[in-house]
Length: 247
Image (cartoon, rainbow, N blue to C red; front, side, top):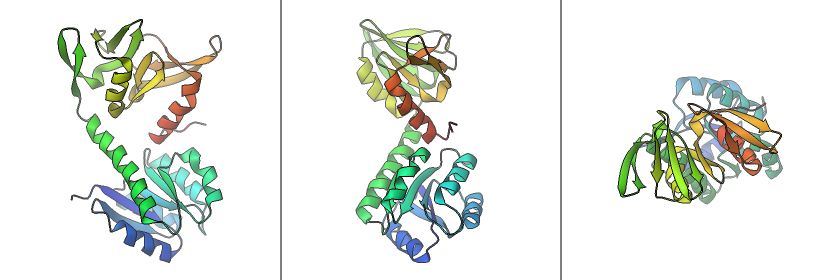
């Protein structure tokens, strides 16, 4: 199988590096392209290698893993992280970095396989997104559409409408729930019970004090679209995974 997950391991204990490397060698689609025992070595590895996934020890001698994680995500937006820790309590502070997983050392191979499966799913979705044309059911047949040209999808009464950047609107005979399943592979997000929006086209999030909710500004959309209060945190988590930082 062709290697497609390039890994950097960062841990200040050589025995931990050796053990994790040996475990990763079990997986044919994983290649360890670098190892580092401190922040300087880690930065050099990232500069010299294409890396998809970083295994990062939380507690190291020269710097805290979270400090290094923040630095990595600022320079390499979207970098996938898996934290390593010998103490589960440390993991509680790491969710701000939206890691793929937290693995307790010594890492059990079954937990490692589960974490790598999540990485494969993310990378697989990135490849699927490159497929820009799909067929959508409409009244009387099917229409071939370009996904990248969609501005948003909305439900109005019993109708489900797909809006495009050029102003075109088509009426889909599929339910919004079915379209949510279809377009999840293309980074669409259910921002509201009546709306599906492409994450890549979000330009702003605004508080709507009157409705006690939020509004979204999307690229090429004339008006703001609603974001439910219960979807606000979930959306920020998705955007953080894509490398967008919130202060």
